[in-house]
Image (tube, rainbow, N blue to C red; front, side, top):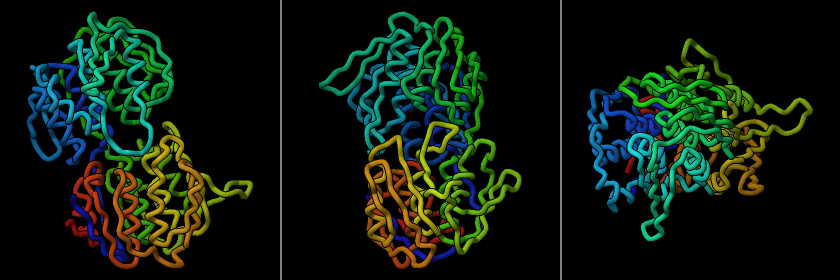
Length: 435
C-alpha cells in the first residue's frame, strides 16, 4: 500500500492541464465492443480504473494498440467467450465498477454477457436496478449464480426496442441502456435519461459509428436500432472533476493558477458553484484563471439564510465535487451546509478534517455544516487514509494547505481517478513524496 507525504503551506504557481475524463473514458471504452472495426480514442487518462478496463478488454480478446500518449486503437474482432466464464474474469469485474457497462454492448452484439457484482468506491448503496430493469425491458433474461456471485444475461432473440421511464437518472445506467439499444430491433425511447456531458459524448461517438440517437443533451432519448456499427474516432473531454479540484486547490493554498483547456462549455454549474463560496476566477478563452486570494467569503441566500450546496442530476452540481467543496469551505469566511443527496457514506471522511482542526458538524450521513476559519488559522498536518477517490483528493487539498507534514495512506484510491497527481502538482510548487 502506497502513501503520500505532503509538506503543507506552499503556494502553487503556474499552469496545469486537466486529464481526460475518467467517467467518459469508461463508457467510451466499453462502446468499442459494439463493432468489429477499429475505434480510435484520444485523450485517454493514464489512471488505474481506465488501465484496468483496457487490460480487461485485452483479456477478453479485443486487440488494443497504444498509438501515442493518451491515444489507443481498439478492435473487437474476436471475443474469447471461454474467458468470460473464468474466475479470473469475474474477479477483475468485481474490482472495477465500470465493468458493469460491458453488459449493454455485449448483449447488443453477441446476445450474451456475464458479469460479477462490480466493485468501486465504498460510498454507500449503489444499486444496479436501473441498468438491469432497462436492459430487461429490451428483452434480456437475467440469471443469478449465487455461488459465483455472477449474473448470466442472455438475449436469445435480438433485443427489441421499447419505451422506458427510468426510476433514476443514472449516468452509467443510461449509458448501458443506450449501448444495448443501438443494435436493438425497432425504436427505444428512454425518458428520465441522464444527460451529463459524458453521456452526450457517448451518443455522439455512437452516431459517428452509424447509430441513430436523437434528443442528445436532453432527458428524453430516442434510439432507432440499426443492424451494425462501424469504426470511428473520438476525443475524450477534459475531466470536469479535475477542473473543480484545481479551482478548490488554488483557493485553499491561496495560489494563482491557470487551468488550461477546460472545455468550458461542458462545465455547467461548476464554476458558479465555486463562486458561491467566494472564489474569484475568470474565463480566458478556454482556460480558467484563478487569482491568488487571501480571503474568500461564502454567499448567503437572498433572504439571509445559510448557503446550502447540494448535488443534483445534470445540469445540477455533480456529487463528485462535494468533497472538494466541503474542504474548501473550511478556510472560507462564513458557513455553508453541504448536502450530499446521492450517496450516504461520502461525508464520513470529515472526521479526518476535524482532527486537522476544521470546524464541521456532521448532521447525518448526508449533511454537514462547515464553519469556515477565514484562514484565521491553518489546518494541522495529519495522518489519514483515503476511503475513496474523491475524498482522497479532498484530503490531499487539505494537506497542501495545512501546517506541517501530512501522510495519506491507501493512495491507490487517488490513483484510480487522478493521473500522476503528485508529479503535476510538484511541477507547480507542491511538495508531495510518494512512498
